[in-house]
Length: 303
Ligand code: CP
Ligand code: NVA
Image 1 (cartoon, protein in one colour):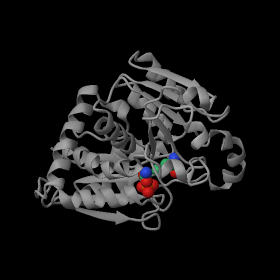
Image 2 (image 1 turned 180 degrees about the horizontal axis):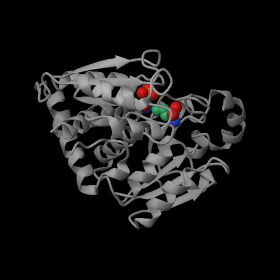
Image 3 (image 1 turned 90 degrees about the vertical axis):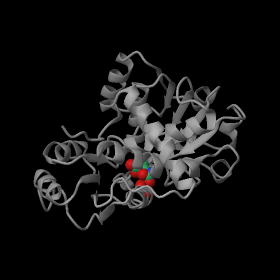
Image 4 (image 1 turned 135 degrees about the vertical axis):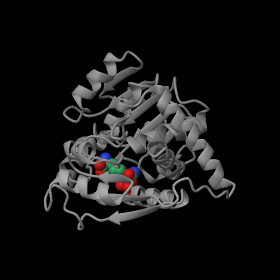
């Protein structure tokens, strides 16, 4: 049976750690200039209903490095779920390609795509989650801290797709996860309930940023208005300003706390220049690791 990569919730701790091991191996090959073409002759369709820099570049480059070929389908190309039914696209693309990566608005469309595709489907972000991002994030933390468990990870900001994926990760790896959001912008309640019921991690939802950053190993933030929420940006800016990751907030955190952001960043909103460009920031290592982790995910699904 084919396996998809739609949510971290679908993977065991062992499977997640196997992906990290393969990521490290593939990253070494890139650093040593060693060619590695296990996917020679294989093709991947990349269906984008929203814009992207990192996701497109890292998947396309990664697939090329693996010896395969990736096709970019822009938001104007398919009109998935609008011009054509999701299940029809799933079946058509499966006739051409060996694997699909998609970035969609609706998470249920992502699930439908996976259900009707006969080839593996990788989720490159939905309104609900962004599993490839959080796999790259925790892999990056592991490189810097030497471990991927028993860390205090503080996410400050909107309880969005990034926050939901962190919660799904905490259902699998023992972490102290703090989500700090203003009232009304908390992460998905069902995801929280599910993750807490696994009894793996301590998962707190707080509203006070000063309390949230105390003793954190990682301070993570993301945009206040995600793709598709542009109309709410002005209103959200007012609500979220006290949640800005700036030098004042960082003064309450440990000196060696790492700062992360999935990017793109709205500099001056959720994070200030001095913090994102400062010595604690690892945002570009994080961006780089998208490619290495995703190559491991592709190779795992196609093995
Ligand atoms: N972090 C991330 O997914 O970036 P893009 O939206 O540019 O792909
Ligand atoms: N929460 C952001 C993440 C972008 C990678 C968004 O969905 O726009």
